[in-house]
Image (cartoon, rainbow, N blue to C red; front, side):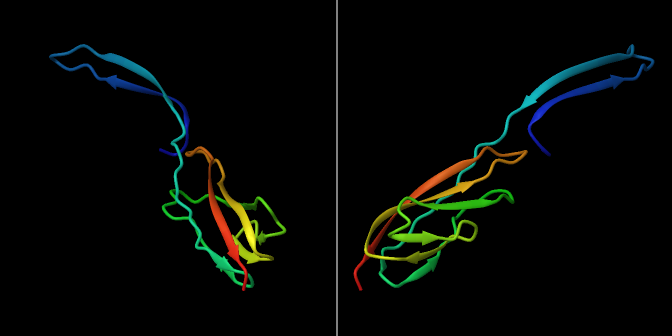
Length: 116
């Protein structure tokens, strides 16, 4: 499958000594496949940094990372490197983009940062 959409398939059967010729067409709607991946984070200690990639990603699509509280942990939007800024809790959301073949998808992971 190259991408989602509608396709019409036509089969032309040639006439033979036993059969007459025939043309058969069928139209198919192909939906985008669902996306799925997993993402989890270990608990960190203030001052630590980590780059944690999601697992089981299908297809070559871009990822974006978002921190629910940028005063607790900042995150590089494109490579997912997390830098701890103070002790506390936040949620890191990873979003995989939609493509011609797949739907977009997001996963949340809780992050807890302890005092050093």
